[in-house]
Length: 217
Image (cartoon, rainbow, N blue to C red; front, side, top):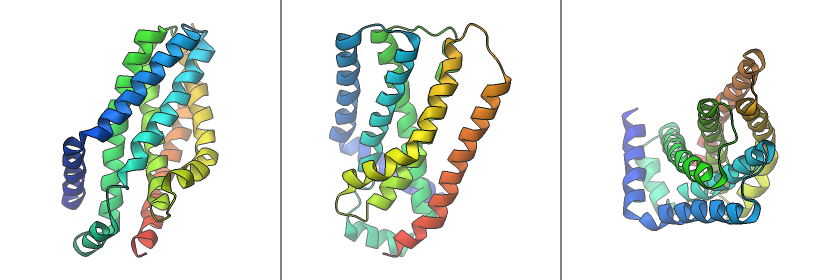
């Protein structure tokens, strides 16, 4: 666990020193929300909900795709001698999870400020959005780790990611619709939340199983 926290701190310090990457993602968020506001303005709840999750998807791709780019082949060789593949991939998962949670909070604030808030239960939507950001960051961290061994990382992430993320995205859209309903039903949401948590857990398990094979490459 100490190795995981040390690698997490390393990624955090690199992010603070190379601030252009963070500013690039922030600029993407602000410009996307502003363009949506100019294009469609305040919309119906279903459209508002769908646009939010599509935006979250592309924010996650832009934020997570760079997490493995800063580790060159020489640096990876150094990591190979001082740490384990499990500690390395867990540190990346933890870092991207924290990063996406912060970006989700910022995106939600800007999105509500520009596009309005048609939901009846904002607290439920906030909780679902954080749950969704965790799931998206887990999936794309694993895909970025696989794609980092290829030359065309961004293209491979898109090819591998969209078929994998579509079921999760549909579940998130279905679950977040509950925040727009006048009456809240507790039975169905718990089943969907349980399914999302099971998907997240399976992604972590798969990352721990598959990444050591990539680590040896």
